[in-house]
Image (cartoon, rainbow, N blue to C red; front, side, top):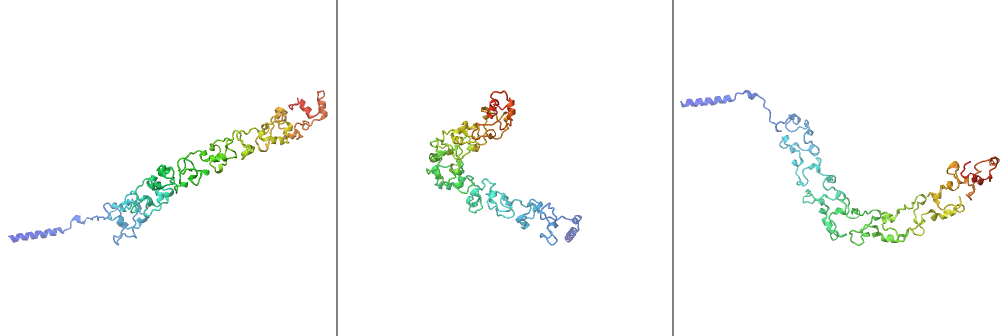
Length: 426
């Protein structure tokens, strides 16, 4: 009985084994291979691989990396894919620089590596331009100094954030300066009060003297020329403070005797040599013939305060020597402006009083009928002599007949004027 039970058990085991070998319907269904590149990877194998093996075949590789979030440029085009995709699951790839590259700056400049570096090289060739976007643009001498003079570290790779005030870096310069001694004078630690960041030196053109511009004649070589006490503290900005000696010694004109103002800017600018001077001569405009550059031609006695302003005072010799017409002989007025302007050479002259004092030649029937004084005054030695009948070609016989019975009639120019004082035929 026991042996029969053992036989039944053995047969059952054999039948079960045979049954397990019988193919089932689901065994004939195609199973999808599991991709090493992760779930939902949709790029066909043929894009990168061939039947030669699973190694990427460069002859058929056609994956367009530009369509991803990380286009390959520069050094990224030359490296092995597995350096960026070590797990071969492409969706796990990193796209930030610091996620793949060790930050040698130890977070002192932030994580945006592309502010300084490019995929082509780690070398940075435009440090100055990059720095212009920071809190402290590099201008003046700061554009030429070595980075490590400001950013000091053991590794030369850390760029700690520095203060932007000059004194933060230049305290030693401030303390060590003796010419002038900044500490004893009590100068401000705001260096840009006196020094400009655009300069390449601390003095000369590097000194900010905008509170008293050092232009032209004030473009001095040494501070001691003005700061004579040896202490370059604040001094008066009034010209006379430094130029009293110049004022006292000037003789052309003599400023002291003429009692000129000590406000030098009334006449002078900072032009070297005090010239040109621009005195406000509006009370006697220096126009045309009076446009002279030598004061003593008018101010001959050195007296600049009581010089006459009437023409005759300066031009009496011109009046006396004039022969065409002879002014003294004809007793012409000493008021030169009756005929002349300030035109050089006294010409053109216009004797406008002629109409009122003698005979109308600028108005009436004679207006525009003459061109020169000598048309009527044929004797230039004597402008008291004139001729009417030289212009008016009257026939003496006709005129004698026409004036028959007129008392005092005589056929000469003087007689014409006696009866025709305004040039009228009435």
